[in-house]
Image (cartoon, rainbow, N blue to C red; front, side):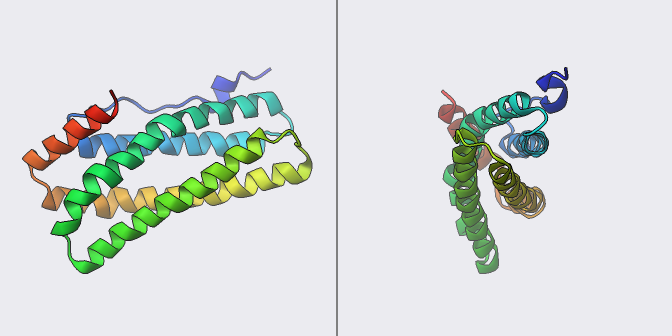
Length: 175
């Protein structure tokens, strides 16, 4: 029997909240690992059902804690400081990121409801695979964009003092 951790174990390293931009990018890698886990789990709902459900549960634990904190770090600490320093098109870009967060949360909530459903038919497995496919596509596009444009905007516009304030807020959020 294949152990779930062999199929679904995360691979990323640690990051420091003292470097908030690097921490956010490292968190993207950890989110991507959970997306990979969910894709593999969705593909094995029939042949490795219990292991797949355990993998979903593990991914959900991360998303419900670190994933929620990551979104709060961006929406409550980074975006508000960055927004006034950006041009109109760049502010529109930030609004698009916030929309992505809302849409991803909606899909994620739907996926959690599906996984919790006692009815686990082929139709159910197809629904799960569909939601996972849409969720992972949205997240991957979103993360790639943030890794490129958002990171660049933040590096260009936010000085050490502002980054220290963001780091303080991120640490406070985790206590």
